[in-house]
Image (cartoon, rainbow, N blue to C red):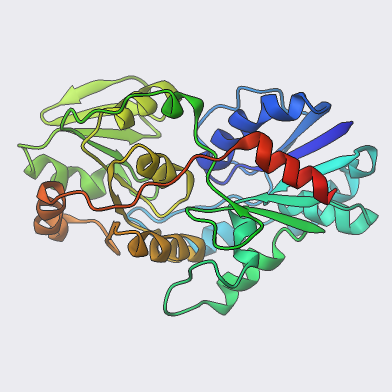
Length: 327
């Protein structure tokens, strides 16, 4: 069986999930990877057959989505050309993790596909949303990467086609302990937006993962790390808590490990607002923005007891068996 697995690279979570799924897909047949987008800072350590800039997300300096810059980078004629050139008709199975070009190619050539990933879960009305829904946000989630069938991933099984998150094997095999530090991964925030805040909490040790950092080093109470699988996995396994955005994969990993979690959804990114709404129902703390005014909140969060609910790890063979039953 020839399989096309299309991966959206607007964030590291899609790439992390692809690394876990790839060996299982290879057991089913010949797998070609399509990678679309340019936001991810993690390296794709599996062979990529097709590469596209796709649609990339750009952020303001301190926690928001830069709509103008994002739309400016949307090359519609180029996307149409790439969609027409992508040979989806050559494949027996197309698995699409929210890539617009693959979805459009399948629509052009009338080829069935299965959207598989977190965004697919929003095809269900039972999946949590914020109190104030966004018409445009809902439109993007449901129409950006349309497919013939949908297999979703989320923190809980809100519907019969929604499965638990794919967790890295290193976390499944780990024995998490609390060594007291706070792990920080907030890709929508530049360093100078948060450095004063973290430095002022000089009794707290922070492990801060930043895309421009190329090697680990320490300044005062802050340990700086590059965005790297090995460093991040080790930090998360041994942390007291995690401060991160409103994504899906990283919060899932923290919850699986039983870690305290503070989520700061990116302003203007509707999917992250939805995720934050789901996490709040699970007892996770949330902030709209993180800045010097958040100091008291942050101290209270660090000191309070962890009351979040753990998530289960995805049974990948079981989920893929369900996916194959739809093809």
